[in-house]
Length: 194
Image (cartoon, rainbow, N blue to C red; front, top):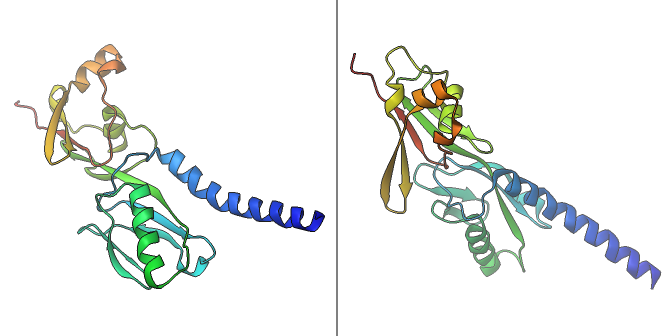
């Protein structure tokens, strides 16, 4: 009886450790309800099948990932839990008996374009505001229209444009005007008229 108890306890600790690592990554990135996009970097863990694990897997521009045994699978557009379910269904059909698979988002991106010193894609770590994004991109050029910054956000199948007067945020120090970015957002800094 005591041996059975010890085996159960050891199994639980190992299993909890496996789950805990994925749980930590998900919480750190706050991915609940987040739909995966092209260029996201994810990790895929297979319980009891470490040889299939994918530590850093980037979703291709066409939205797919390539996995051992099953090949190409569409990942973009799914939430983390939806992709986990999909992979468990596919792998259980022919390859694994009762697979348990966890998916974690390692990085998500936002984009800063226009009159910025270092335009491009940046990894989203924690909450990133427009002002933070501009700072991470090296700040404004001399030609930036700081009062006409926009955030272009994809909502479903449509685009939403949010105007942000960064000049006012900087001059007044009132960060309530700042906007928290979402993965895939594009911060556009237009050129000033003068």
